[in-house]
Image 1 (cartoon, protein in one colour):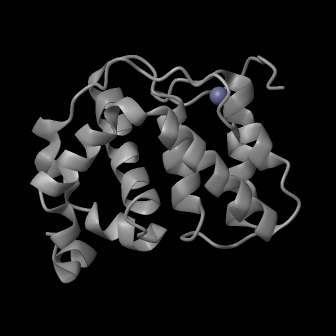
Image 2 (tube, helix red, strand yellow):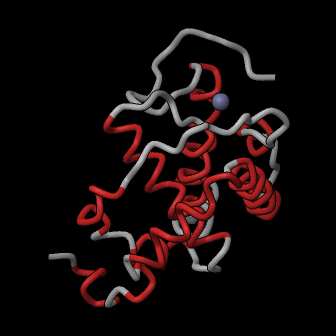
Image 3 (tube, helix red, strand yellow):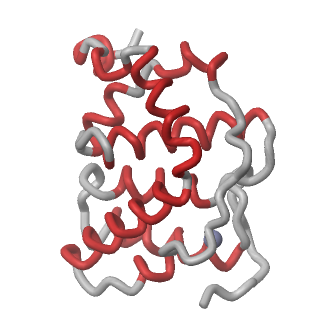
Length: 168
Ligand SMILES: [Zn+2]
Protein backbone atom coordinates (compact mmCIF):
# COMPACT_ATOMS: atom_id res chain seq x y z
CA UNK A 1 0.00 0.00 0.00
CA UNK A 2 1.13 3.51 -0.69
CA UNK A 3 0.72 5.71 2.31
CA UNK A 4 -0.31 9.30 1.95
CA UNK A 5 2.53 11.20 3.58
CA UNK A 6 3.39 14.86 3.34
CA UNK A 7 6.55 15.70 1.52
CA UNK A 8 7.92 17.14 -1.67
CA UNK A 9 6.13 16.20 -4.83
CA UNK A 10 6.69 16.76 -8.47
CA UNK A 11 5.72 20.20 -9.73
CA UNK A 12 3.31 19.02 -12.38
CA UNK A 13 3.06 15.25 -12.34
CA UNK A 14 -0.05 14.54 -10.32
CA UNK A 15 0.74 12.17 -7.48
CA UNK A 16 0.50 11.91 -3.77
CA UNK A 17 3.70 12.40 -1.83
CA UNK A 18 3.96 8.76 -0.66
CA UNK A 19 3.91 7.46 -4.20
CA UNK A 20 6.40 10.11 -5.36
CA UNK A 21 8.68 9.04 -2.52
CA UNK A 22 8.72 5.42 -3.69
CA UNK A 23 9.32 6.57 -7.26
CA UNK A 24 12.37 8.56 -6.11
CA UNK A 25 13.80 5.54 -4.30
CA UNK A 26 13.33 3.42 -7.44
CA UNK A 27 15.10 6.06 -9.55
CA UNK A 28 17.94 6.16 -7.03
CA UNK A 29 18.35 2.39 -7.39
CA UNK A 30 18.42 2.70 -11.19
CA UNK A 31 21.11 5.38 -11.01
CA UNK A 32 23.32 3.61 -8.50
CA UNK A 33 22.84 -0.10 -7.83
CA UNK A 34 21.55 -1.00 -11.29
CA UNK A 35 23.64 1.56 -13.13
CA UNK A 36 21.75 1.18 -16.37
CA UNK A 37 20.19 4.38 -17.53
CA UNK A 38 18.83 3.39 -20.89
CA UNK A 39 17.24 -0.03 -20.84
CA UNK A 40 14.74 0.46 -18.09
CA UNK A 41 15.11 3.98 -16.77
CA UNK A 42 13.40 5.63 -19.73
CA UNK A 43 10.47 3.25 -19.38
CA UNK A 44 10.26 3.88 -15.62
CA UNK A 45 10.01 7.64 -16.06
CA UNK A 46 7.54 7.45 -18.95
CA UNK A 47 5.31 4.98 -17.12
CA UNK A 48 5.23 6.94 -13.88
CA UNK A 49 4.29 10.14 -15.71
CA UNK A 50 1.61 8.34 -17.75
CA UNK A 51 0.10 6.93 -14.56
CA UNK A 52 -0.03 10.39 -12.93
CA UNK A 53 -1.50 12.69 -15.59
CA UNK A 54 -2.61 15.40 -13.16
CA UNK A 55 -4.91 18.19 -14.29
CA UNK A 56 -5.18 19.71 -17.76
CA UNK A 57 -2.62 22.53 -17.82
CA UNK A 58 -0.08 23.36 -20.52
CA UNK A 59 2.77 21.43 -18.84
CA UNK A 60 0.61 18.44 -18.00
CA UNK A 61 -0.74 18.22 -21.55
CA UNK A 62 2.80 18.24 -22.89
CA UNK A 63 4.11 15.80 -20.28
CA UNK A 64 1.37 13.22 -20.71
CA UNK A 65 1.44 13.40 -24.50
CA UNK A 66 5.21 13.04 -24.75
CA UNK A 67 5.49 10.24 -22.18
CA UNK A 68 2.66 8.29 -23.82
CA UNK A 69 4.27 8.70 -27.23
CA UNK A 70 7.51 7.30 -25.86
CA UNK A 71 5.62 4.42 -24.22
CA UNK A 72 4.05 3.67 -27.58
CA UNK A 73 7.46 3.64 -29.30
CA UNK A 74 8.92 1.29 -26.71
CA UNK A 75 5.98 -1.04 -26.13
CA UNK A 76 4.30 -1.16 -29.53
CA UNK A 77 7.17 -0.39 -31.89
CA UNK A 78 9.90 -2.19 -29.96
CA UNK A 79 12.36 0.69 -29.74
CA UNK A 80 14.79 0.54 -26.85
CA UNK A 81 14.91 3.48 -24.43
CA UNK A 82 17.86 5.14 -26.12
CA UNK A 83 16.34 4.93 -29.60
CA UNK A 84 12.93 6.12 -28.36
CA UNK A 85 14.65 9.06 -26.74
CA UNK A 86 16.64 9.89 -29.88
CA UNK A 87 13.65 10.04 -32.22
CA UNK A 88 11.86 12.29 -29.71
CA UNK A 89 14.59 14.91 -29.30
CA UNK A 90 12.99 17.38 -31.70
CA UNK A 91 9.43 16.51 -30.78
CA UNK A 92 8.64 20.02 -29.55
CA UNK A 93 8.22 21.20 -33.13
CA UNK A 94 4.93 19.28 -33.10
CA UNK A 95 3.75 20.71 -29.80
CA UNK A 96 0.75 22.43 -31.40
CA UNK A 97 -0.66 18.93 -31.90
CA UNK A 98 -0.52 17.88 -28.25
CA UNK A 99 -3.99 17.50 -26.80
CA UNK A 100 -5.37 16.67 -23.38
CA UNK A 101 -6.51 13.07 -23.59
CA UNK A 102 -10.02 13.02 -22.25
CA UNK A 103 -11.35 10.99 -20.52
CA UNK A 104 -8.40 9.99 -18.38
CA UNK A 105 -8.09 6.28 -17.66
CA UNK A 106 -9.32 4.80 -14.46
CA UNK A 107 -6.08 3.29 -13.19
CA UNK A 108 -7.96 0.94 -10.88
CA UNK A 109 -6.18 -2.40 -10.81
CA UNK A 110 -3.08 -1.29 -12.71
CA UNK A 111 0.36 -2.28 -11.49
CA UNK A 112 2.02 0.55 -9.55
CA UNK A 113 5.42 1.76 -8.44
CA UNK A 114 5.19 -0.17 -5.16
CA UNK A 115 5.27 -3.42 -7.16
CA UNK A 116 8.40 -2.22 -8.93
CA UNK A 117 10.06 -1.13 -5.70
CA UNK A 118 9.76 -4.69 -4.38
CA UNK A 119 12.15 -6.09 -7.01
CA UNK A 120 15.25 -7.64 -5.46
CA UNK A 121 17.69 -7.49 -8.36
CA UNK A 122 18.14 -6.00 -11.81
CA UNK A 123 16.39 -8.87 -13.54
CA UNK A 124 13.34 -8.65 -11.33
CA UNK A 125 13.41 -4.88 -11.69
CA UNK A 126 13.40 -5.01 -15.51
CA UNK A 127 10.59 -7.53 -15.49
CA UNK A 128 8.54 -5.48 -13.01
CA UNK A 129 9.00 -2.22 -14.94
CA UNK A 130 7.94 -3.90 -18.18
CA UNK A 131 4.83 -5.34 -16.54
CA UNK A 132 4.00 -2.00 -14.95
CA UNK A 133 4.55 -0.15 -18.25
CA UNK A 134 2.23 -2.50 -20.17
CA UNK A 135 -0.41 -2.27 -17.49
CA UNK A 136 -0.40 1.55 -17.58
CA UNK A 137 -0.23 1.69 -21.38
CA UNK A 138 -3.23 -0.67 -21.59
CA UNK A 139 -5.17 1.59 -19.23
CA UNK A 140 -4.83 4.31 -21.90
CA UNK A 141 -6.38 2.08 -24.59
CA UNK A 142 -9.04 4.66 -25.53
CA UNK A 143 -6.29 7.00 -26.67
CA UNK A 144 -3.91 4.56 -28.36
CA UNK A 145 -5.09 5.64 -31.81
CA UNK A 146 -4.44 9.32 -31.08
CA UNK A 147 -0.84 8.54 -30.13
CA UNK A 148 -0.36 6.16 -33.05
CA UNK A 149 -1.71 8.73 -35.51
CA UNK A 150 0.53 11.43 -34.05
CA UNK A 151 3.59 9.23 -34.59
CA UNK A 152 2.60 8.21 -38.11
CA UNK A 153 1.38 11.62 -39.28
CA UNK A 154 4.64 13.29 -38.20
CA UNK A 155 6.81 10.38 -39.34
CA UNK A 156 8.48 10.32 -35.95
CA UNK A 157 10.09 6.97 -36.70
CA UNK A 158 11.69 8.27 -39.91
CA UNK A 159 13.59 10.98 -38.12
CA UNK A 160 17.17 11.25 -39.30
CA UNK A 161 19.22 9.62 -36.54
CA UNK A 162 22.06 12.07 -36.97
CA UNK A 163 19.77 15.07 -36.76
CA UNK A 164 18.07 13.60 -33.71
CA UNK A 165 21.34 12.74 -32.00
CA UNK A 166 22.88 16.17 -32.32
CA UNK A 167 19.82 18.38 -32.25
CA UNK A 168 19.65 21.69 -34.04
ZN1 LIG B 1 0.84 7.05 -7.52
